[in-house]
Length: 494
Ligand SMILES: Cc1cc2nc3c(=O)[nH]c(=O)nc-3n(C[C@H](O)[C@H](O)[C@H](O)COP(=O)(O)OP(=O)(O)OC[C@H]3O[C@@H](n4cnc5c(N)ncnc54)[C@H](O)[C@@H]3O)c2cc1C
Image (cartoon, rainbow, N blue to C red; front, side, top):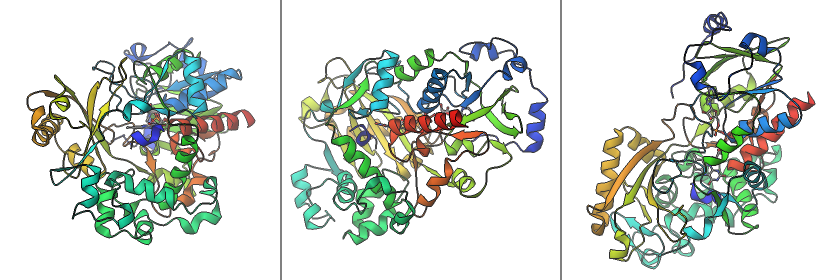
C-alpha cells in the first residue's frame, strides 16, 4: 500500500501581541490581494460576521473539511500560511517526472482519497506494480554491495536466524506484523491497551533482537523519530493494523497522473469560500460570540467556529486564548514529527543498465536510501531517483547547505556505482523538518504518549481540530480526510 513508500520557527505572540494585532482589524496589507485565491466579497470586518467556520490550513484535511461544510450550506474561509495549497502533498511540478516530496500514493482501499480524486477530476494511475519492477534493491553495508542472498550469509548480519534473509529496512515491519499484540488493532487507543505502550526498543528486545540489530533495522532509517527508544511500539502496532487492512484490498497503489499536488489544487478550485494564501495564523482568541483569528499580515477573521488543521509542530507557535489545557496542551507541546530530507537526482543515461544492478539502494552510510521514481507515462521508465535521509541522518543533512548535501549525494552514488560517474545530476534538496509550517513529515507517538490521543483532538470551546495527527483509525492521507469528517460533524452538531 501507499504508506510503505514513505517511509520552524514561528513567532510566538503573547497576549500583548494579540492585542496589537487586534488593533489592526480591517487593515489589509497592500500585497494581500496578490495572495488571495479570491478576494473577500466585502471588507473583512463586514464579511466576518457572516462566516460560519474559519479553517486553518489548506492541506487535504482543511480542504476536505471545507468541502463537507459547504455541502451543508456553511460559509467557510480557509487561511493558509504558504503560497500554495496541499501542505504535505507536495510535487515538484517544474522538475522531470514530477518528483513527489510529500504524499506518495494511496492504497486501493482509500475510499475518501479516491472519491476526492474523482470529484476533483484528476486521474489516478496505478504505481504499485512500478515499484516492484526491475532488479531488487541492493543493500550496502559499509560500502559493500549485498544481494538478499549474500546478506543472509553475511557474517555481520546481526539478526536472529529466522530473520537473516530480511533486509534491514524490512525487519521492523515484519516483526511488528508477525507479533502484533492487539487482537483488534482499532483498540490501540482504548485505555485497556495502555500497558502495551512501551518503546519499540523494549518490544524488539522482547522479540529477540540485540541492541546492534535494533540500531541497524530501525535507527539508521527510522520510520518514525530518531531511535527505537523514542517510539511507541503500540503506535507501530496500530500502524500495522491499518497497513494490513489496506493491503487486504489489493497491492495497488494509486498516484495522481502528472503529480499528486494536482489533487489539492483541483479540490481548492471547487471551494466557494475564500482561500487566503500567504496568511499565517498567529493567534486564536475565543469570546462568548465566536472566534477571532489573528494573522501575521495584520488581518483578523471572525467566525462562529474554527477548524484547526495545523500540525501541532506549527500550532505550538500560535497563541491561543483561553489557552488549551491538560493532555491536549501536553500533546500540542510534545507531539513528535519525523525528520526526513530528500535529494532528487536524474541520470543522463541509465547507469544501472551499464552495471546491471538496481539503482535502488539501502545504505548504512551518509547517502541514506536511494529510491526509484516511476511517475511517467511509460510504467517502466525511471523518471528519477530520490535519495532520502530519515531521523538523525536527516538532521545531519539539514545542518549542511543544500548545495553541499546535493554534491555529497552525487559523489556517494558515484562512489558506490562507478557507472554513474558524470551521468547524474542532483536537482533539489527538500527537508520537511526545515519546512516552517510543518516542522517534519508525519506525527508520531513516543512510548507512553498513546494516553494523549483521545484528548488531543477534542474541541476546545469553539475550536475544533483535524489533521493526520488527530486521526485514530485511518492513517496518512486517508486519516487526514477521516479527521476532517469528524471535525465537520462536530461543527454541524454543535
Ligand atoms: C514524505 C511524505 C510521504 C508521505 N507518503 C504518504 C503516502 O504514501 N500515503 C499516505 O497516505 N500519506 C502519506 N503521507 C502523509 C500525508 O501526506 C499526510 O498525512 C497528509 O497530507 C496530511 O494532511 P493534513 O491536512 O493533515 O496536514 P498538512 O498537509 O500539513 O496541512 C496543514 C496545513 O496547515 C498550514 N499551516 C501550518 N501552519 C500554519 C499557520 N500558522 N497558519 C496558516 N496555515 C498554517 C500548512 O502550510 C499546511 O498547508 C506522506 C507525507 C510525507 C511528508
